[in-house]
Image (tube, rainbow, N blue to C red; front, side, top):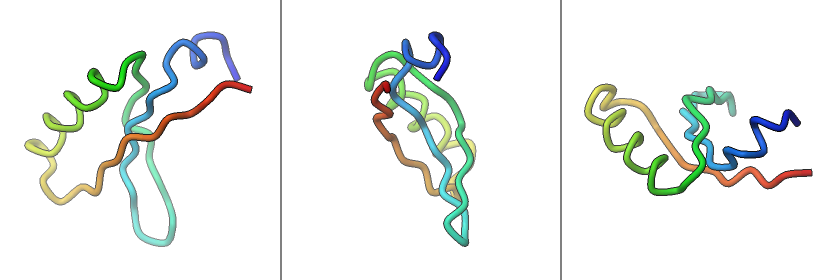
Length: 57
């Protein structure tokens, strides 16, 4: 894992069919990730978005 990724452990993920997923962004704080999820839900209402904590190695 890159150092830059370790600084941003909160991930916004778009869940797709067949257990596929797309990382929409990485954030330092949960509140930042939550704010972006709210905006993305307005822009893409059909998207299944979730926030995941990705701990470091």
